Image (cartoon, helix red, strand yellow):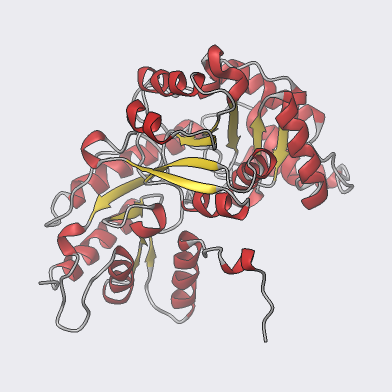
Length: 397
């Protein structure tokens, strides 16, 4: 008899991680699986960052680090916020955590009470929904449209905000759509937040350095809602450091103190060696970020060109990150004579079986008629993957 808590029983498994696990298991069995499921750069961490980590080991950074992060790292993050984002966060307002995901759940647990509402914009990153549930909050999903580049309209927010709404989670560049809001579009959203006292906004900016068009705008750079914004960022995507697990927030002091208090009871400080590596990543300027961004742009153009030749798929060209959200509704309720496709998850499993390509169904992102494709892999693998996908889809009638 298993005596699991209602909390864990109500929690969904991360579909991106689940599909990645299935891919690994099939590869271990000798199958030629191409995985386009994980949001992970295929580049290695730049050498100067690895050297900093090696030096940290030699310098005996092996003791408990401060819960909120080393002071010099928080000072470097403070400088980065000011120079790159136009935001003034003192080191006291910055908390370093074990990845951006950890940073987000820290904030939600710190300011959302059971029964309070949190607005998320579909398609949304898979973990937002369940992190809200874990805190006892109520996810309020606002759907966006492909025809509008998956961007929310201010009036859509106005109609769902109630006295119980505590938080909006905002993400640009977006995972899973790759769309980027303009300064004018963000200011309209900021003005909605300004009207409602006690309403806060998490601005998830983890993909800020992977931008193909326009400028990256930080929500907290709008002075009139600066004290209502929690900025979340990290080193995973822009520096190819997913496994190092370092994220951070910039926030009003009272929220930073709350997160520090919470983290002190959960994880304490993030890994000491990873923090020293993150310090080098943020402080030292080389061409690695630009090189990776240029490669992602080339791959974006390639996969868009390839997908245009696949019958029935609809999409918008992403402006950032390394994902493309594809409308697959044309293939729902179709069959190859053996398997009938009812949902996007069915289609993902079908493609894993027939094409040996791993994708993630849109149900996990609050977008049941879509699939997310990550193009954070080599040009050759993208060409082969789309070739396989096209052949498998042609069997569905």
